[in-house]
Length: 383
Image 1 (tube, helix red, strand yellow):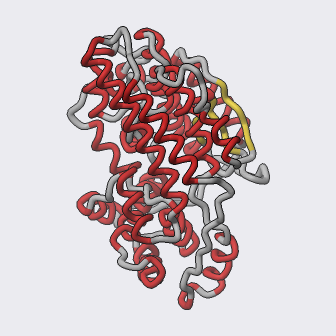
Image 2 (cartoon, helix red, strand yellow):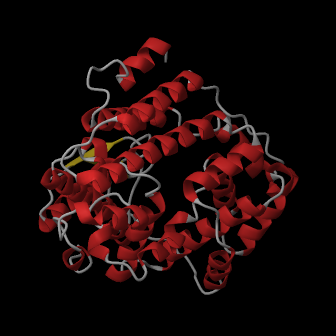
Image 3 (cartoon, helix red, strand yellow):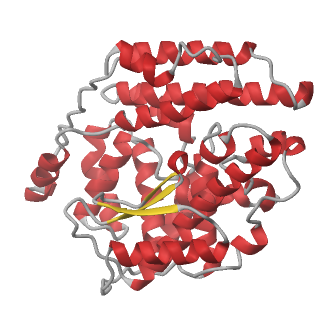
């Protein structure tokens, strides 16, 4: 992406660049740009094959893809927008509300820059580790020990998979209708399900070759999980509309990811849709993230980490995938560990949008009393 393309993407020359609307446009554009930068290993399939051919003699030789993107210019232009945001006049929210919004925007741009730097520094282990911790926090040792303890009693099993992505998409639509949420649902040939709050679109994954299948238990769990993300986006748009501001709360606010994934996992727990397979999945992810975080040298420690995960019940292939995915972005501890973000809090406050508890509390004076879809409905109405 050229300098001029980046400037157009971020609309840095817009006449209203010192406005909330402009800041929202830049944040939304930046999120789309960062998707192009998502940390990725260029030779992952070849390395997986080498590992599976001889697990006991394997040491990773990971190659990180070259970015066709001018990171320095992107970071500089984000900095320009942040500076403009700090100086802009914000009317209609009072002096205190205006300062909170400007600080929220500044921290949003700060986090977006961290994501860009992470993508540009994967081959620098110390920087990768530090940047991941700044974005998602460090894995907690006690949570890791709890996960290891739980794994002793969990036995995942094979399941029939009679459903395809179109079946899953229909289940998404039905549940969102029951919740009173208008949202687009699409089927795409991608490996995993995901939500695009900036486009108000939920994607049901058909697999890269259209091969992905789902058990009925997994499909129900995914509906509970993914529709939680949709509701926080929907509520964020509704809240922003009611207070007459661009929908930051529906798309992105600083460091909300752990609260987001933790809330979805908590809803699964309370809905009773977590079978041993999914409980195992959350805890083995937690263990993998902690082991990667705790390893002094990823490459040298790889055999021992694989052995530990296999001892905890993972297959060798699953162990490889989890370790490599955390070497790209060290974030798999936020799912199960993130449920703690919902302890002893006002759930309705956290449901006003994609907010962590700190920003939800700070923004509370500006927010309506109740979100559009409240906790009572969301945590009692299940598919």
